[in-house]
Image 1: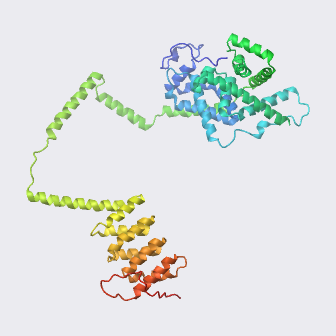
Image 2: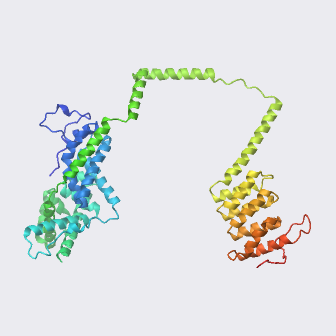
Image 3: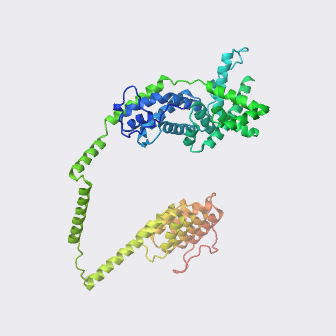
Length: 210
Length: 302
């Protein structure tokens, strides 16, 4: 359940000192980021390899737009470079990168506030109207597509808490810290978001079946 | 346990973070409550579907773009700006010049302070105060007074350029107190009359200029401003002023105004009366002409 373990309980020196590490033991995210901060910019590549997929799926679930999501991942890494001096010694990299990602997403939604979140016709692609006896596989794939659309219909804060807790598997404690709230509040929000998602999901399923 | 409470616990139960006794009472409730059973199975289905969402891979474009960005950034870092280079040299220069141990730095600072104090005491000592001779004092005082007068005038000019209407109005009114305003003040007044956006300021400017109608500049300014003016109140005031000043150059403008269909009726009437005033000979040298006196309105209309 826990994400990539990022916090080994070893005090990490703020100066990059990964040279002595044997090849078999990989540097932690935190060490890598400290090195990046110290000017070894190339080490951001390692962090990119570790996080690009997760960030991409975070943005994809938030926006349901593949190209946009790739751009937003790029923006996150650009901001990491730009603000690398603000990364703190006692920092936790996962928390930091999600903090940046949330901000990037918020900026994106603010900029595109007038455009309703994707009702891209291709998102609701060929549902089995034309096929009177769809096989189980197709129905299932279609259901998942409906679920994706349903997710994007939720208000951003509900969508976000669902994506973080259910799809990115981030602990509620961590989410609470990210959202600057309590664990209890996160639980309530997840509960409401799931309930709402269910309503929206069954609604579009009925609509698309009609 | 009621239904709402039970359903709130679903999430924790799914996550396996629910305390054992809570979990037990939840299961007991679930066994007997069809509503909660429906809720539970719906949630299960939804969660299963969420878990089934495949992890999509970003296209290779993302990786390409990222490494391109990284490379650009690395290059920028490798080639520091000439400014930074110069600064680091400057820093090094001062670093070699100044002591690097804190104690020495402190001593150096103290020494500088002492030297500064001595130098100040030595060179900046005030010279002996000498009482100036009486006549020099008098001339200096006169010069000072002239300077203050000049400054007063300067303040008037600048006030006229002020932004707020009330301030402009105030400065126009202030000119009325000046006994002999110089040409700059008068031309400012004329400028206010012609260009000020506020009706009140223009009206006060007419009033202020009324005291100086014997000045050619003022008359010319009034003549120039009248055709531009569109507010009837200000038009009326200007017409009356020009008529009472017996400005014959204004006759064509009066004529035009008296025929202008677009002008206010009162303005047309006033223009006609003013024309009449200009045509009647001045009865006596110092008798003020009243533009509103019921002179025969011999309008020269076509």
